[in-house]
Image 1 (cartoon, rainbow, N blue to C red):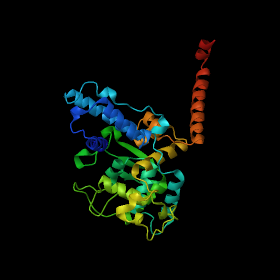
Image 2: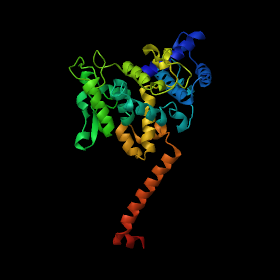
Image 3: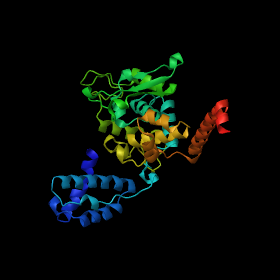
Image 4: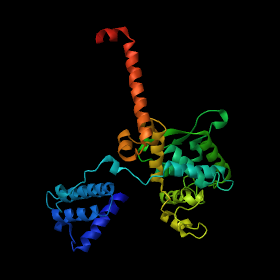
Length: 331
């Protein structure tokens, strides 16, 4: 809803600028002119989203007789390649690894909230809303017993932490031992000992309780600033740079919000050779969505997956041909 409101807000501002005050005045050539203007200013994927919203808006206007019939048919939707639809501003694997290496080795920053956030965001590939839902009880650290550790994503709408896909989005997600160890250290040492208004103990906690999604986004910008783990690629002095101030963290060109971390994580998981079907279950997405929007896997990673699938198919065929009846049918 926020995205639709923002996209239509831009259109309304444009209409006001050319003197269109009522939706009944809209004609196909007006929308086509807006399309041309926006196509010169935004990426193809952004334009696609805006024009889909525009078409739905026009269809609604037609349904209530507020605009002429056929207006929605005049809304052009750009035909773009899947590669153009993907998000290229993801947190890259080298950048993520540099940050994680710094956090893990730093006496000051290890097991901080920023560190715990980045470990969870990168190794689960979860959405911003999913990270916000986590409680302390949702971490199942088993590294001391030599067993697999995991975090549980639960749909709890009655206490203000729904998952995007409701109960279908509920899942356990395995994490490496070091991730579980870091998050455990954060809970025991640097986490604010607070509860939210429903009496639950948020894992990623502010001093006041469970953070809003906007607060999580700000934390993400702070956790991914490159100067956290080294020099500034933008020739800034971190001690005087305004981008390091809380209110300006998002202005750093290299800092990332949760969604680009999710994008980078999914690409990294695919490059590790994890099948798309498995990645899809881990991050609560469909395989098609991953292939269209997230799969910026390297050529090496893609071919590794292709070879794995080929070997799986060959194993299946070999097993079948070992069966005499199947062999006879072939003959």
